[in-house]
Image (cartoon, rainbow over all chains, first blue to last red; front, top):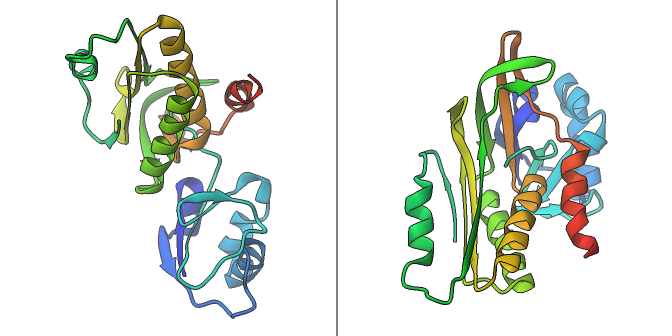
Length: 83
Length: 150
């Protein structure tokens, strides 16, 4: 699956997008986040407070219990501040 | 119609195009957001707007379609810029045309309130002490939610 990061999540991780192969049991956003925080300290720090994180799957807002599959585009970003 | 672009826009030209040859339009409202210098307690010198290409357009189209279901509009337009912007620069234009002013005013207000909480843009402000990501504020969320209750 393709992961995208925006704003301070992008700058803190030092990456704007990456492709990852996750184990088959990772089937919702929450499980993906649990898996991501084990990838390193920067991930752990960025995703330590999930109230600061918004998630989109295939460019639609979703909750943490939203199902995900291999071909999905999953984006993590802070609450939006446009306008 | 929605547009996401780096370039500036000419509001007069955009509004003229929006209502051209449509004589059902009796009221045209618009809102323009500008880069201001205050980011309490500091002053900002410029800002950079980041966005999520693809999702931004989807969200703006979705918000616009909701406005068109809710109010009887002859035309509507959202232009949102991204990239580096200086003080006083235009950030966003929302315009709504309708037969009557009431619908045009309400739809325009709804669109700017909702896009502030839904469109995936993030502001990075440049201040004397460095660059800072703007935090979302509850007042914006409250402003958007006001419209759900009506």
